[in-house]
Length: 126
Image 1 (cartoon, one colour):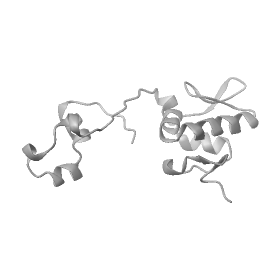
Image 2 (cartoon, rainbow, N blue to C red):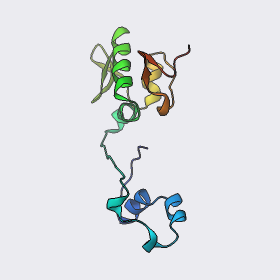
Image 3 (cartoon, rainbow, N blue to C red):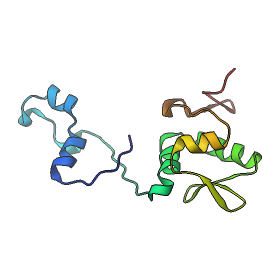
Image 4 (spheres, rainbow, N blue to C red):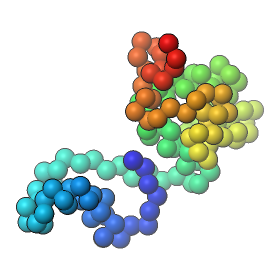
């Protein structure tokens, strides 16, 4: 999940202890210590104009990102993670991940389908 928030202590507690977690451990003293939860939280900063491209690359596998960059290149584009989808050094898409897929005339797959198996993306039709 990627979210943009202004966080204070309460916000951090809501991220670390979401409602389903709170419901499971009714009493605060029953919760395991944070260092035993084995939760990794990655926080990435992105400018509004590149939020979509950052979301896209953070929610797909590395193999899918490489595949998508290659596909973009085959269509005359360049997938630049710091700027978005480029054509002739002009930003074409990147504000939303949907805009990147649309510019490449591809459907926008759900993140869990952004995997490559045997050189083919999981969301491509057979």
